Image 1: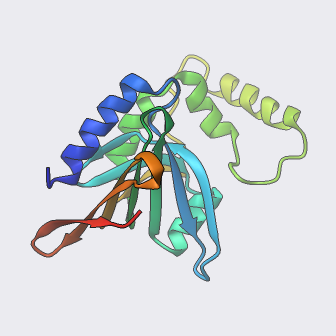
Image 2: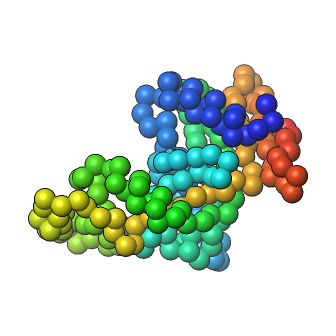
Length: 191
């Protein structure tokens, strides 16, 4: 198989069957313009040849780092399958229509939480956040909850995709797909 997206689809389907929790969890690594890295777990919300999508508050640390340095790396680690997938590439914003559609699919409490949270900002007391949640619950009582203006999504557009499979005696298999002007090329890496 020389199409990394077909291989990802196959592996992701197997992970959805085998992983007990969150097969769509991925580590997202970003960096500041001066190269200081940061990594956190986010959830994959869409994927295909155009890239891998996640959503966040644009004023969060990850949002600010992406705005300043629009490159990222993703890592899926499916421990029960003894596999991982690494993805690297530039990041672009999703369209407003795409963000609106995803936001509308979230649970009401998740929508309200997006309004209530100043993601990544200092919080004096948990009660402050809980009160903000209650305030927004009252504000939108009986109405649809619109997407907050500073909440949207990003798409990581892969330039490199590495598929790692555990093998006995640390003789692991690493398949690297690299994007080029004429499509994807495939090679192997030493473990």
